[in-house]
Amino acid sequence: MLRWLIPLFVLLAAPAAAEPRAWVDANRQAILDEYLPLLAIPNVASNRADIRRNADHIMAMMRRRDLNPRLLESEDGAAPPLIYGEWLVPGATRTHVIYAHYDGQPVTAEDWTVTPPFEPRLVGEGAEARIYARSASDDKAGVMAILAAIDALRAEGRQPAFNLRIVFEGEEEAGSPNLAALLRRHRDTLRSDGWIIVDGPAHQSGPPQLTLGVRGDVNMEVTVYGPARPLHSGHYGNWAPNPALMLAELLASMKDSTGRVTIPGYYDDAVPLTEAERAAIAAVPPPDERLRAELGLGWTEGGGATLTEAINLPSLNINGMRSADVGANSRNVIPTQATAALDLRLVLGNTPDRQVQRVIDHIRAQGYGVLDREPTMAERRRFERIARVTREPGYPAERTPLDHPFAQRLAQAMRAQGEFVLLPSLGGSLPLYLIRQERGAPSVTVALWNHDNNQHAEDENLRLENLWRGVAVIANLLTDG
Image (tube, rainbow, N blue to C red; front, side, top):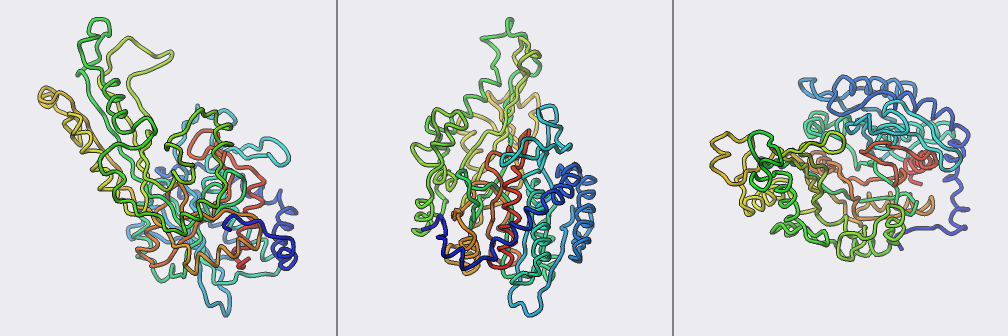
């Protein structure tokens, strides 16, 4: 059985598992007093000055805990550094890295309704009390929970079951473009038997998740063109092609009515799940009915597949579209262009380059000339339809086998604490393939935060009960449960 609810006699045999939670409950205010100032520091990944301010602040937090922190810099010093700390245990035979990231997604401040994104605010009481702020859950919660878990162990006179290396990254939300070089440059410092990644939401039914993999990700933008200048929709409607409608038709050609991607070859490279991985998925009670009610959805994509099944397939999502204006700024015009931002999630076997090329080939098959820059006037006259396609580098998926000793040890530690969900992969993405590629180490993700946390969006939040539980879960993982 892969969704664990431990019988009473097991809990009685391992009373230590409750100790960190008792410490957490006695120190809630101290944790918040330290966490809220961290959330108040802007941390959009593209702002290097703010990222450095965050790094300095976290370094001070780690110095107070005697974790010997230092910055692992890039060769030229230009990239956001990795923050490194350690707790070495005499006689330890294993070394593990625990990881979280301290950068965040961009913000549109005017869309936040509870509080501005970098003015953290506590809302509610009791079990549903929450902190609202950018990165409250993704992923400064991981930073705070790891450091508080270390406090809990020291207060109890306990130590990790292995040499502990702590790594906090400052550009995960930008795709970790410098992580590979940093892992290579600091290879001896970061040598380990496995990485524990603290990131992502708990299962929709409530329990923490232990996930053995993540999907890859690559982002691209598609812009289609109409007239060279905006035209009056009365004078030129029914004559001048409208790029907004052209883009809508192009995007609609990429998926069918069930949400399945219709681009040729899109699913061909996906490595099938093993029998054990399929069994793990089947063992998790589907959250779909509850989520449909919670989200006001009359139907879901996938042709009957559950959410847990769907996140183990490649996906194509429209992150946003823009063409002229709507609402109070709407005008009677035929716009000059329309743009869509696409998010391609990848599973094991996909590569960013092949998946992007399949999208480009599909766009060409719809009659478009494809460019990677703005078209010239001569090209506008030459092609009936033009699409400009740009992309980010992206990265592939990663998955540790269910029977890997590192994964089994962490699953046993989670099992000793109570109910949890074990899955082959998280729906979200992290560049964990680099850890295997550059360091030869497996990785496993511990996902702890409330599933309705609005991560990457306005009004991001963290349910405090998830934070308290998360600190205790991490403390127990560090001691093998």
